[in-house]
Amino acid sequence: MGGGMPQMPAPPAEESKDIVNINDLIDTSKSECQNLDSGTPLVNVFMDSDSFVLKSDCDEQLLFNLYFQSTVKIHHLVLRAPDLETAPLNIKIFINKCPMSFDDMDAVDPVEELEIQEGELEGDIILNFVKYQSVSNLTLFIENNRDGGDVTQVSKLEIHGASLLESDMKNLKKVGCS
Image (cartoon, rainbow, N blue to C red; front, side):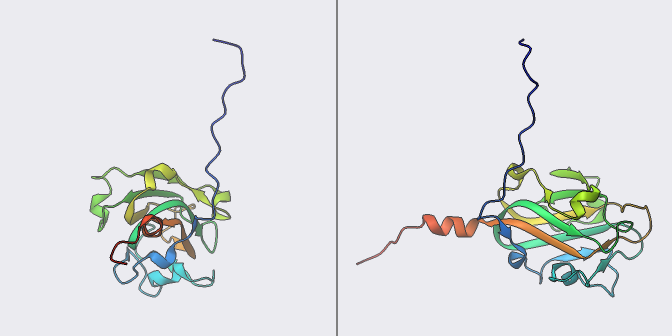
């Protein structure tokens, strides 16, 4: 072949005006987090403040089963922790498999496996957008934390994407008698 420059991978898709925080589409009455310290409820990670924290209970693992009120597409996650040592490190993501338990983690292949870099805890965790085009529920399995200790902490979890219901509504045509 030619002696041209090697091809660089394409940059991640840029967030458009249609990509927004879709946490308000999470059905918190159905959603759950397993291995959660009883003093730190799931809703803590959806608060708009880093002073609320969610902690793991008997080991470093956490399992989020999140249900959406309508089908969504997901672009990226925002994940924060109160300190680097207890921040999540490895995460497996499953879609449309809820409810899942810790026993399911080795039996089902994840859609994506992530190793969270330090800089991603200050910014966005970009997902492989094409894999998340029709999501009704999302499972996040946090396998471990950065220092290998028994407690993992999360102070914020934001899911950014778009509702497919809104997209579908734009395409609806008025039907009926005039």
